[in-house]
Length: 154
Image 1 (cartoon, rainbow, N blue to C red):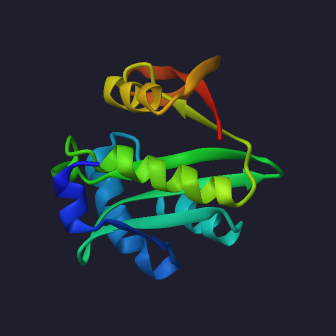
Image 2: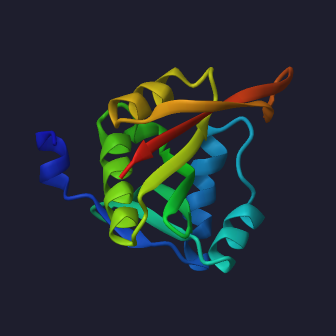
């Protein structure tokens, strides 16, 4: 972990409905096709694992994970634009993976856009490997974009 991450002591905090304004500010800023507030509310209502990622008092990111029996599905992992490229995404992924592993998950799945080179690099470095492809999964500026399905044993 970098000196920046050690010095700022990032931490995971369970997400609540009261946190959704901060989450939506990041989500709407960084995505062309963001999740809606309703998507986050539904995830919380369903009991999915959802965390805010803080540095000091600032929410810099968040993630949402659905746990089903012994397998987890990473639904959303995001870092605010100003904090990207500093290792926080990797640290958040590691923290979420560790937390989910402690819940009994044996593997984690996720989807990522083929055009998301940064995300693909992050997941590959974390040990995720492609196991499938979902055609026309994501909305795109020109129609639809496929999703690469990735998996990692925990």
